[in-house]
Length: 254
Length: 254
Image 1 (cartoon, chains in turn red, brown):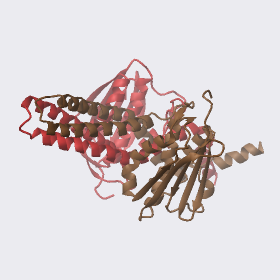
Image 2 (image 1 turned 90 degrees about the vertical axis):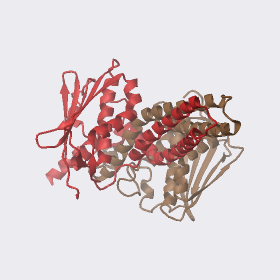
Image 3 (image 1 turned 180 degrees about the vertical axis):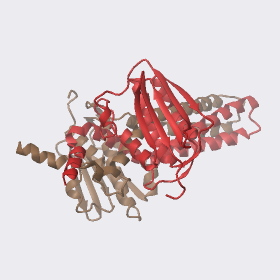
Image 4 (image 1 turned 60 degrees about the horizontal axis):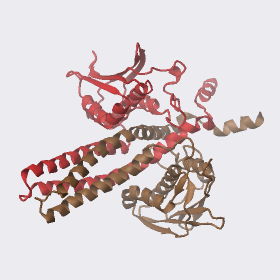
């Protein structure tokens, strides 16, 4: 009984005190709900573009030099459709049950980074990747891992953004002695305020100004990493923060 | 003291009991954070498409009939860019202070509905609009109202979706005797379960299956409508739900 009491007081919160975070999360939820439909509409437009660009390239009456321009239209359309495709996967959310498939972590990192490219540029992030050829393809849930990587990279990117001078983010993948996959994300950002550290994984804890962050990123990270039987460590370094993820290959039936 | 105590017990919650909603909200937040960057990247690709489509249309060596195809590419590119533009505005979130500008409610409804078009089709929603020419242009915060309309239309759309037979959503705008703008959103959906009604505006209250809804939509609606000095009424009808929004024109300086 005493234990239950203690647990309650740790997890209880006054809504009013987290209202800015709730409002931020609520806007996120509304956009999240909207996204599948919005993406579908944009994709329809892209398909029309790609269809006609393809058709026109086969027209013999169009000079060869101009076909290069049509090729550029096609390439841009394909690029837009790829980016939309990753967004659409994210917009589908994660399924309640873990979905185990082979996961190529460097590929997943690349996917996520290509959507974040503009954010990296805006915050003067120099992205350095180091994907070891030893990185194992693990059996895991790509959809959960995509959210985990995004949340961690967003934190790294924001940490650098708040320093205003830019800095480096290093993404490293590899293998540990036990054969698990390892992902390290290191940033040269502002680090973690001391008072936040013990509460990192609690909901609605954020260092951002009111209304700019819901403080749910690391909650997602911890929950999904736990579901995937992995481990996470967040550490201060001399000039920023290092996150280490250890992810095992899971049995196909869970 | 006694009052404070009572208020606390009403607003305190156990995180564990709302974990599915928190995880849904957390995914929404991560996507919300990502969206400005992702939209920027997709927009870059669209600008390339539109630039080359424009260039090729001025080429004299291309036969006139084929220029029609280029025109179609251009129109689709513009359509995609418009949809992305509304998404980008949403992805910017609302500013902490209310931003007062003239708001054309029918236009705002159209904007929001065009992003929801695919969701309406999927749920067999027949959308009926009735924008009275008497609808006043009000001074209000378009960015907050966009979220309010989206949240209400998502609820209406979901209510119809869960009936599996489709149904009608009516959006009506007009003016009340006091000169306020009025928006009515009526759906022929499944209605509100009795046990939910007293808790409609509380965070994390949702009728959706675990992980499918964060239950923050109506919290946003109530908060923003209050900030905009408006009123909201949610009522059962014979065959669904009717939401009535009354929105005053606000003084330019608030």
